[in-house]
Image 1 (spheres, rainbow, N blue to C red):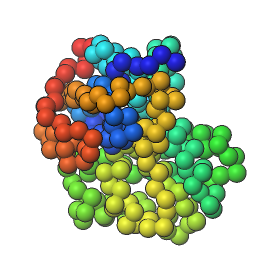
Image 2: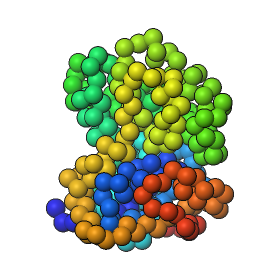
Image 3: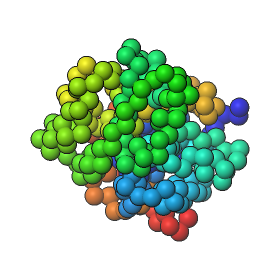
Image 4: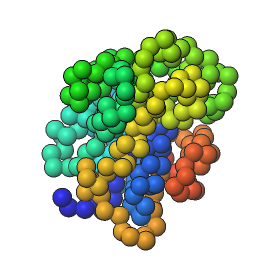
Length: 268
């Protein structure tokens, strides 16, 4: 597979930064164009046709900026629209965040019971259930929609805030009564609340979709960063930056974000 020159990474908002952080950790020296569709976040409460339309627009923008491979750093789009993206762009390397996360969860579970946390669209779509069944048809899967998590994160509420704890307790407390021992954070926003989720489910192994993807990026997309080169990232959003940079720099280990460019995604 031919090595890529620039990786396009997109999400509905801030969640893709968790994937970006992992990509930089495991693939230093890669050139990246990151797009967060902050004007239309969240995607997870929208219908499949709308999610697909947004995703196609997002990919067209990244291609217009020189990307020659795409990471869908969004659990909702990976569940709902990945096949549509690949059909629209045959030959373009496109990776979602579901496959590696499911493989990792199947390896980690001892009880054979895996929980998937996601948006309403992700859980309703059943993509994780199908992928986990492909990994091992004997696995038991519990899907839990957590619709408040994304707005909590996008508003800048921290993981130790009582609001985050109340939401996590509301959604996840029933899992404590089960033998689910591997929990997939099926939305890329959710690692921002990792400590909160772990506090409610202290005995479960939390599977980060971004980390699983980043560790297999070269095999999936042919990514081959230049040895010793600096990581270069351009950040773009579709709405005025009202907190993107402070939140990004609070969570990014890989590289400091100094500026972000607003783009009009509907014109692409």
